[in-house]
Image 1 (tube, rainbow, N blue to C red):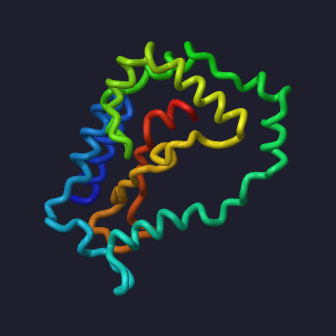
Image 2 (cartoon, one colour):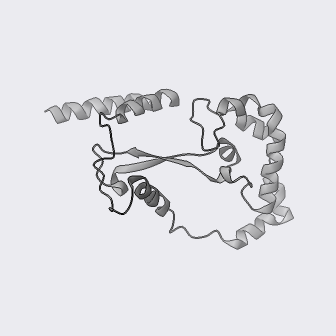
Image 3 (tube, one colour):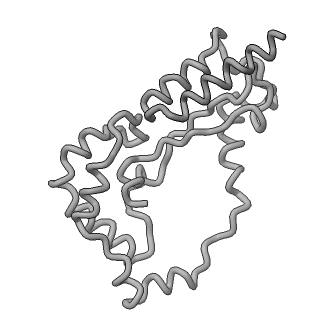
Length: 182
């Protein structure tokens, strides 16, 4: 009986979250995920030669290891003059993307808050469009290494957590300039 009531309670809470704005959604999600344990990963079983952080990192990195490399013929097509005309980003489009950034999102590894990018959009959209267009012509992601990084936060699927590969999912915080580019 109590399991059914508990399930119904959580189902109702999750259903209500579907209609909430993203800020409220994450606030409620954090409340669901909060745990009274001082060490929430104490139940996770790992290889004794690794720390929990290393095991989580290895698991999330290993997810994409089987992806095939990008076909080099595709890059050559993108570098051709005829294809480049289709992939030119206008500064006003970059400014629109910057203006629509959600200021409630957590910053990525670059530490740039979204409100700063949003408020400075008229001033930085032209240089960013030039960087993005140059990147598209060369077939490379923009140079700053920080744009190629992400902060990965493991979020538990179950409580208590016992196995990394089945009981944790990841949320990746990307740099907002990389998100605007993508």
